[in-house]
Every structure is written in structure tokens, then in C-alpha cells.
Length: 107
Image (cartoon, rainbow, N blue to C red; front, side):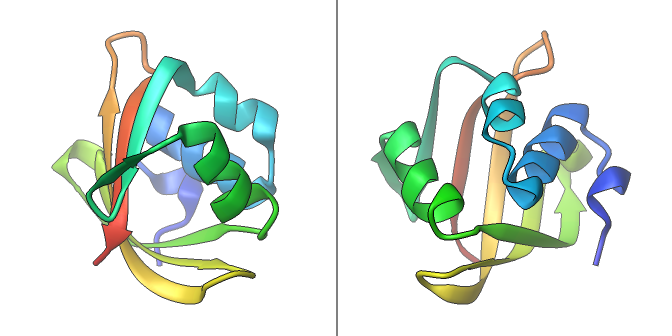
């Protein structure tokens, strides 16, 4: 496992740290206004998805691997709804260092 504080991209590191800490404010601070996301190839409403998949179900990411300068992750993701699953994550980070889009799904 790769500790979140060793992830190379600062925005991705902040995202993972916020998810694992249950810190909604830090999570939203690392996202651009109007950020988008997809889950298993389908675009989702980010706020609704995060509430269901992270906040109300205690989501947590254990990072197994990182690639593409830290913008692509493989993680063991777990929450109280689905249990644990191996997931892939890809992030689009703006020049200002905030995430404008992320895509996740089963790895």
C-alpha cells in the first residue's frame, strides 16, 4: 500500500486524504466549481454520489498503485454499503491544482 502522504500529485493526495478523513470541506476545496465525475463509465451527480458512496457510508481508499504522474490510481475502496472492492481512479487536474473531473470504477 502507498500511504496517501506519499502520492505525488498534490490535488490527488488532498482528495484521498479528505476521503479517508471524512472531511467534506477539504474534499470540496480540492474540486473545481462544476467538477464532474463518472462511476463505472456513467456520469453521476458528484454531490449525490459523494454523499452515498463516501460520506454516509464511511468510504475509505487504500492505494495499491499510482501511475501517470499520480493521476491514475488503483485502490482498495471500501464503504459500509458495498464492502471492499478493487477500484481504478483517474483524475483531471487543472493548472491551478484542483480536480475538475474524476472517473472511478471497478479495476
